[in-house]
Image (cartoon, helix red, strand yellow):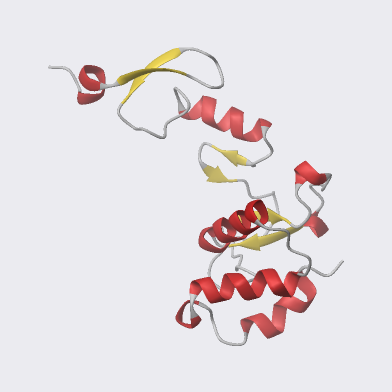
Length: 145
């Protein structure tokens, strides 16, 4: 008995190692987690085996600087593609939801002021998704620079 992927999978070429593989997942680009991790780290995304990289000695609890919920990813304030560094002062912790929204806004529009960006993200999330007063306490110092 063959597995569904072996029987029905579409033949593709891995974008990292150029080996052939079969998959039933339309969005899959790589033949393995190892290739995906290597490709993402080459692009500066900073994951290992699909998990966010946490530097040694950092506290485990991080909170999103926009909505106040648990954060699992770091956002580069000045994107690496635009010459931003990996220095701690150029990074801010965001939850996955806010990080996705921020990245989409950066791709689609020219944002001049941090308050404009944060305001758009908060409006997109809605008032029930943002912890009260979190913005006032933290946002003024997050993107200062």
